[in-house]
Length: 239
Image (cartoon, rainbow, N blue to C red; front, side, top):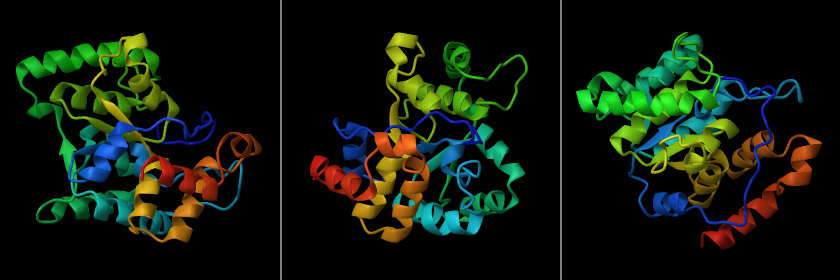
């Protein structure tokens, strides 16, 4: 999803350890596939006038993420979405042009005939839980459906998203029979903590991003921990 407007509350869980984050701490050189909302500057202008333009988001988030993780990937459907954001598209093209490339583009054309059948089967299970309709090939949730279907077939573990619906497709894989039982979810707040802990970004900037994404509305402030509590509790959980 490209828009954060009208989004459901992104709730932070400080009671359970995410084994995927532990694995990433131990080995950051794994393929992590990103949803579009990890790349596009968040817009919560209906709540607060202050926001992130591309240059600020690049400094605070994109540059540190692509420095921390050498095997970041996006699906070609997400790549196609970026055409509407010129600065971001140019940034991704620059990453692609690096030697070796700093971003991987998953392409369904690279799947074998058997993999394509499996991919289509998984997509058929996923899309009814989203706003995507394959018969229309509309843009709503298209990136996440295509991304999840592809990585499930290829046996890739990690999907990083800041979107409740995308996360639930993974977390409720068995209940909803989405076929995503082996895919693991990583939330933005977890990678914010990773950058913070490893001194891979400006700590004040990471705090600002955290507050913008998780601690802006009154409801969020009643539900989610403030920055100090978040970092200290996460530090205890993942020490």
